[in-house]
Amino acid sequence: MAVLTRESIERELASGRLVIEPLDPAQIGPASIDLTLGDEIRVIVTDSEPINVREGTDYREHTRAQRLDVPFVLAPGVTIHGITRERVTLPDDLCGFLEGRSQFARLGLMIHVTSAFVQPGVSNRQVLEMSNVSGQPLVIHPGVRLCQLVLMRTEGRATYRGRFAVQERP
Image (cartoon, rainbow, N blue to C red; front, side, top):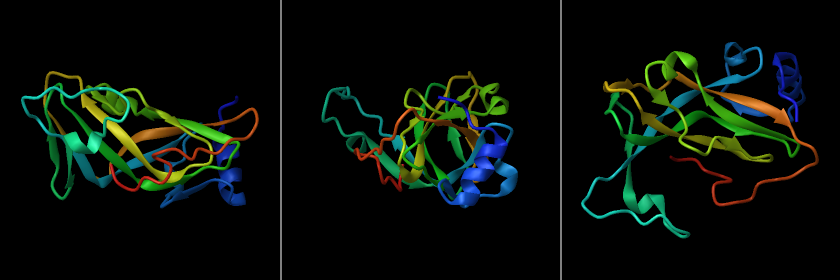
């Protein structure tokens, strides 16, 4: 696999094989595309019962969705789900990884806990598992370029058809 540079990204966009909507050309970097936080988050509901982590556990049973009409204060040690404003559509021979942007990582904001991989063939908005690992509250605003998508060519072709293939909400 090889990481796509700006020139390759622009060529894939121009051909229509790669689609990111909406996209401002200024979001394309030397070897990644910045993605922005949308206007909805999902917050883990705090209760006294432990959450069983096993096959079939549904995160929606332990979280609640809320609009990001006003900035959200992310307390230290807390994880929320955000979702990108952009819909990412990849052909069957491109995949990617979501990475945080260093300016926010240096403040203690993690953009993904463990699932940064973007499968080939997806067409969806990307969920961001955002955690505050600093000792200070962080104020989260919609529309900020919080992460970057690094794209790579696959060896062979594949299309993801799993549970989150068409996600539209965090």
